[in-house]
Length: 232
Length: 232
DNA sequence: GCATGACAAATCGTATACGGTCTCAGATAC
DNA sequence: GTATCTGAGACCGTATACGATTTGTCATGC
Image (cartoon, rainbow over all chains, first blue to last red; front, side, top):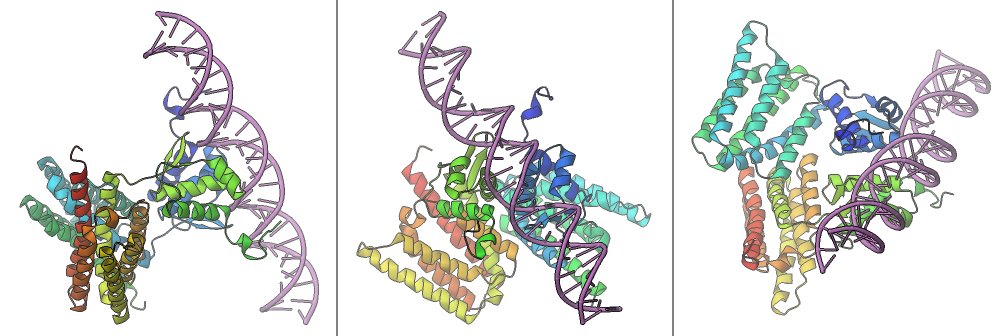
């Protein structure tokens, strides 16, 4: 036996199923409401339903899927209310993570963050030419945020930040395509945040700025929603 | 079949196993390092290993148990490092929750909090008589904290707070019995925090105070540990 | 006496099987 | 035409079974 020469056995079927399903949710292949049928997934993975079930329960714990007894699992969407809770929580934990990371940020980290923001700015220049790639912009944005939070020494906090990002990634459309105004503001706020860090500002001040940066996005989205559907 | 007349089917075996094991961990019956053997638990519960396994994986997601492939699950302890990460994270999320709750706190909530703190103070008076009940003191402390955080409208945040508390409850000995000094300081800080809230202080100020209150406990424990075992 | 290897027991990981529950379509009564 | 009932199909929940992996023990060789 042993199909894979060495590393074949290292990962369990649960892990395989978990990675596959999660990737499909995060990448948008499975959109909110999509039904995750144990039997079908098991057949596709060449396994039984037991590992698939366990993987789905794990995704449930991360709020990526919804599970109803005797009915089944569906991909969870982010309704406006959930979006708000998630963003508020992310503002808190990401702010704290960045605040704790600031003392450990190296010059290289800061430079990388600036580079990413410049790439975002460059992408933004395409906007006038009608060749703006929202997907790429969002990806750069996330990488920048990750760069600033990564040195945080508290793994629990980083895990909460990761979970928040993952939930947001289930949104089919990027926030930046919904509220185009936020693109320019975002880049400008990144600059301000990086300047603040470079100036050696106090951790609490940086934390507050990072939190405000995310809260501002949330406020923009809420305002946009209110404008779209005034009869809420 | 159907041993229970009506409500027997409402809960799944997974849920039963989860509740049972969690209760035993939190109550201290299963101490850190205790091995959770699937077969034994299944036999005790009158079920198969499959639901027990799922329950244990759920507890793993909450960091209450540790799972190693092909080896098994053990109850997780809070080593000093883990304790620190947990307390730091709790300081952040609990602070934020209290900060968000402050605008929604009713006079009755505040009064209840004051009452609980007075009960703590009363318990403290027993300390000199050698009749101090650490358990009760800790319980009052947690109820007070819960009272202040509960009105926070963000369920995600409250969930994180709850998880933090649950992890801390796995400590066999209360912090207050380890570092007796913190008892008096804690009560005093509660008073200050309640005064701050009653004075209509800004949410950010309250948040910071709540965070500092918990951070102070962490610092006290760390200092105590350093004094106990200087050769770390 | 200590290291090394093989064997056995314990336990995990997953496939298969089957009973229970839900959903939905079609038929029947009004 | 609408509402209710009935039945079949799909799917979930869990028991059982068995192969795979780990761990500890004991014998063997140095």
